[in-house]
Amino acid sequence: MPIKFSIELTAKYCNSWPWLQITNNNVVIYDNEIKETQSISLNITGGVLKLIGIKKNNDTQLSADNKIIQDKLLRVDKIVIDDIDMGIEFIRHLKFNNELGTEVSFLNTTFYENGEITINLQEPILSWIIEEKFIKLLSTYGDDKRMYSSVFSKFKYSVLHEKIKNLRNLIK
Image (cartoon, rainbow, N blue to C red; front, side):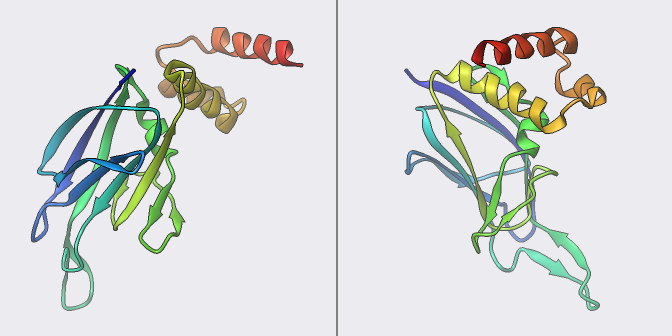
């Protein structure tokens, strides 16, 4: 059964627009430049989804004293999977690998250099979404309840925490 995937991006021009390639299980399903603010909607399957941001070597303009005057950027603003907004915290915790194969932080959700983000989608997709969007973030933030006001705005923390506690007890 196809999975609905959409992504909203904001691009910054410098000599040309940035390029985005999306692959699903090593098959290219999108390959085009991104201009200004753009939304892309695709039907995908479970498995490996890669977002590959591409810019060229001359896409950064420097001043005489080597300060950046203008640079090409590609920011991921939103990811929606099967009509569920994954939220900014999900995007910030994605792993970005630059073209040298080094994993770097994606906390600001922006491609500053060539590289890729890999999302390993598992089915059933709703179980995977709950795990990625809520359970993993609960583990990341621990008992810091201040973080839940924005991350879990659609859920009451105490109810979610109690359900997870019950699930953990069932697993023991």
